[in-house]
Image (cartoon, rainbow, N blue to C red; front, side, top):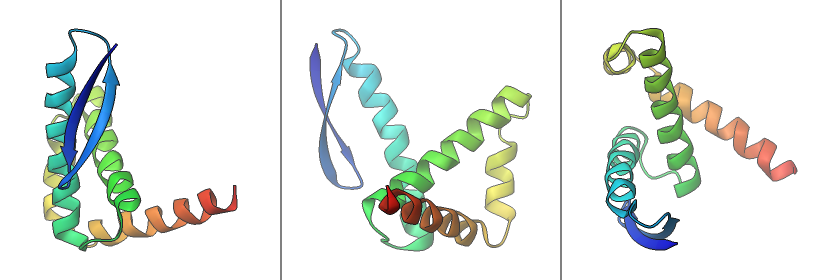
Length: 102
């Protein structure tokens, strides 16, 4: 098993992966970092967990649209909709409260 250090939002993280998958992990981490930085730019710094959650939701939305055959639809909607960041922030806050109760 290999270990790759990736940087997300300016912080290094060690990630384990199968031998030979190091470059793929770096590419995926760079993509995720882009989403995290986009969220941070929209909502400010709200903590890594919340930023990661919101970026993960954005990626899940993009994947959902691709599976529906609408690639790019979610990105266009997010860019043109008011309150997207606020909605994601509200969802993240609710999920954090649930996680704290566990």
